[in-house]
Image 1 (cartoon, rainbow, N blue to C red):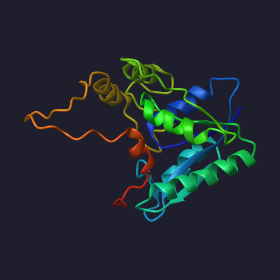
Image 2: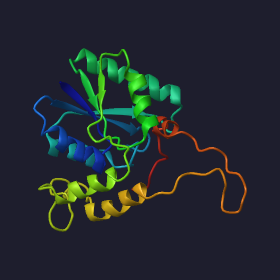
Image 3: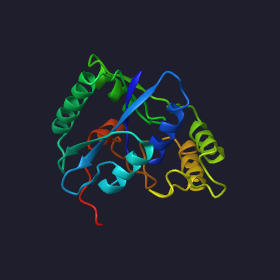
Image 4: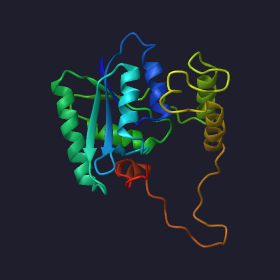
Length: 209
C-alpha cells in the first residue's frame, strides 16, 4: 500500500506515522500539507513552512506543500486537492492516510471526495466510541516515543508536544456534554455547522511571526 499521509504538522499526524510504521502492509512515501500561500504557514495549525520542512526531514519523507489562498473559497480548495490527488495516483499511490480521531462527518467527507479517484482513504486512529481519545492519549504518553516528562522525543527539537496535557484535552472531549438547542439563558441557538464545513475551510489569516 503506497500511502500518502495527510500531514497537519500536529500531534495526531505524528502519532499516525508511528502507528503506520508498525504495519507491514503500508509503504509511507510522502506527506501532503496545505499551506497558506500568503502567510507561508500550515493552513491547519499556522506552523511556519521551515518548521514543516524540518518535520518532513526528520521523518525522512518527501513533503508536498499544497499552496492555497487566504481566504480560500471551498471550490478553490477542492479543485486544488483534486489536482493533488491526480498527481498522487499518477505517481503510484494507492492510499491516503488521515489522522482523524472521532468526527464522522469529516471522515465521510474524505471518503466521498476520494471515491473513484484511485486513492483509498485509511483512518488508523479513528474510533468514535466514548473514552477512545483518552485511551489514545495514554497510549502516546506510555509509548517509547515519549520521555518521562511527556515530551515526544523525535518532535521535541521541532515542535514541543506535551502529551501529559494532551490527556487533559482529549479527556475533556470524551466527557463533553451532549449538544442542546438551548443556551443557558434559555434562547435557542442556531444549529452548529457540520465539522466538514470547518474541514473545507483550510485557510487561516496570516499569523504573526
